[in-house]
Length: 254
Ligand SMILES: C[S@@+](CC[C@H](N)C(=O)[O-])C[C@H]1O[C@@H](n2cnc3c(N)ncnc32)[C@H](O)[C@@H]1O
Image (cartoon, rainbow, N blue to C red; front, side, top):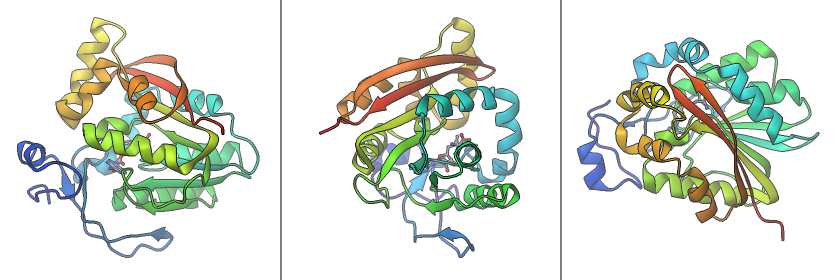
């Protein structure tokens, strides 16, 4: 699996340098999920598929997960009937929180990895919620233009190459309605030397190339370049694995 050379939007030179980091996944049937034939590549939740089963407890113990996800949810100001996308939803913790706090919202979760989506589906069934979980790529979202009121993402963007980050942000801007908002929790510029050192753990796991933007704190600039306005850093959270930053970005109204 990990020896497969990825295809898709990543350049050949980068994928060759990073051979072994990316995975290609075939698709298989899974009730309750929409599954598309995949030929692209992605970095799984904890880089290696065999670690995915440990993802939830590790994140819970190391990232102050409920604190920063509650804050993200709070700043998103979701209203009754909103269509909300959790981009790179992984095991569906944030999507489930959205549905729990806003039962009338129509909640979607999208992730490239079928294994994490299966865990998300199990979580959703345990909670008794109906969410739509879709297998797909952030760089080519399978949704109509202007079809969401909010897009949320929690530590996901650092899994994307520079090119994929740009494409994903353009795609988020496309699927949001005018006046819609993108709310992001992501590894950000370290707020202290201790936070910088702590973040080496994430960089060694997920790779230095995709996580460099976090250290440089360039997400506001990338969001502005993708067409968002009123881009702001709304908070920083010190965690065992580095600084988690929250951002808000609005799609311009007509
Ligand atoms: C660190 S996990 C975050 C999961 C979840 N948002 C959370 O807060 O726990 C990153 C997720 O991004 C997914 N991913 C990586 N590249 C992707 C891509 N190009 N498109 C969609 N999902 C992707 C991975 O499969 C993984 O589940």
